[in-house]
Length: 203
Image (cartoon, rainbow, N blue to C red; front, side, top):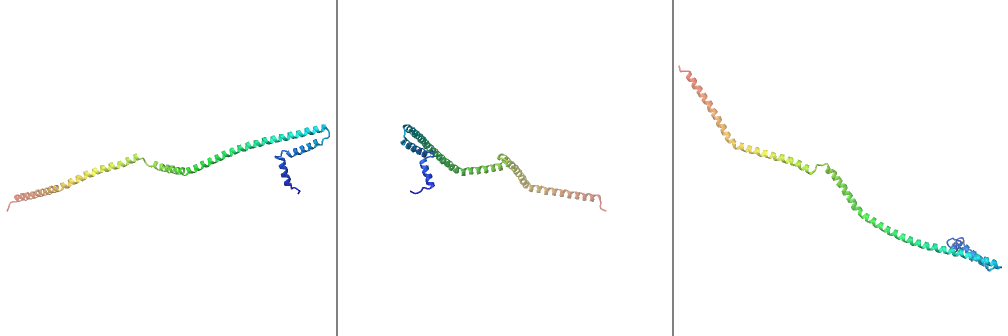
């Protein structure tokens, strides 16, 4: 049989000792106590070793019971951890679904935000201009003025047309008046000549 290395010794010690509660020491004490009980010479010494053996066995049973309770507790803790792990997995899956849903909503939300910014910009531009009612009133004023000027133009054109119709008649009247004035001047000259001839008798 070969010599065990230090690691092998430690590994064997851990296998015997279990969770490090001193089980190997209790086994050694139990074996030694049993051997002493078997080799005891007197009845008193045998009874004393017997009590020590029972005490060591009681300690071992207590340790085993404690270990079983710890083991049972560990099983329940593992079940609880499994349940918590499943709940965390469900929560994580739900969170991933919500994140995916939120990612789908990001483009429409960006578009809505962009539209609102454009609407705000247009609203600011519109506020600098008069409203439709005032604009229509401003447009109606030149229209009414244009209509008034149109009436004036029609009146002037009617008067011009009338004057054009009257012009030949007025021209004839003017010529007639000029002729009458010339005739009056000619008569005055003739009268003056006759008067002059009557005032100067022949020699």
